[in-house]
Length: 201
Image (cartoon, rainbow, N blue to C red):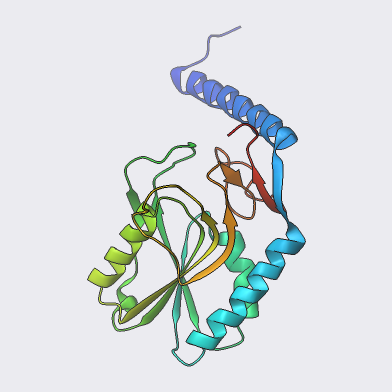
C-alpha cells in the first residue's frame, strides 16, 4: 500500500482532530445545564423587538450582524422588526474555535456605507465587551451618526467590562461558558434550541 503524501497526512490529521472535537461537543451537550429553553429565549427576543421598534422605527437603521455568532439571533429578531431597515454583516473574532478569547482579528470590517447612518449592532453575547468595544470604535471611525447595540445574552461578571452594557438586552446568563442560539462550543452547538451552560464551568 503506497504511503500517503504530506497533504494527505495533513488531511487525515484534520479529520482525526474534527472527530475528537465532535465527540467532545457531544459529551458537553449531554452534561450541559439548560439555562433558558427555546420558549423563554423567543419571549425575550419578542420583547427586545418591541423595545427596538420604539426607538429605531423612524431612523432608517443599518443593522450590523457580527459573524458567526449573531446569525441565529439576528435571524429570529429581524422578522419581528416591522419597519424599514437595511442589513449587512461584519466579522471580528477573538475565539477562532477556542473557548478563550485572544487577540481580536478583523475578517470583514464595517462597509463604507455606515458613514452618516444610524446603526444597530446585533450580537449573540456581551462577555467582557472587548469585541463590542472594537466594533463600536471601528464604526465611529467609519463615520456612523449613531450606534445602538442589542445582545441576546449578557454575561454577569464580577468586574468592570470593557463595554458595560448594551442598549437592548435579552437575557442575563451566569459567568460560565454558554452555548446555543448561535453561541458555540469549539465551533459546535450553535444550533441548539435553547441556551445552555457547560457543566462544571
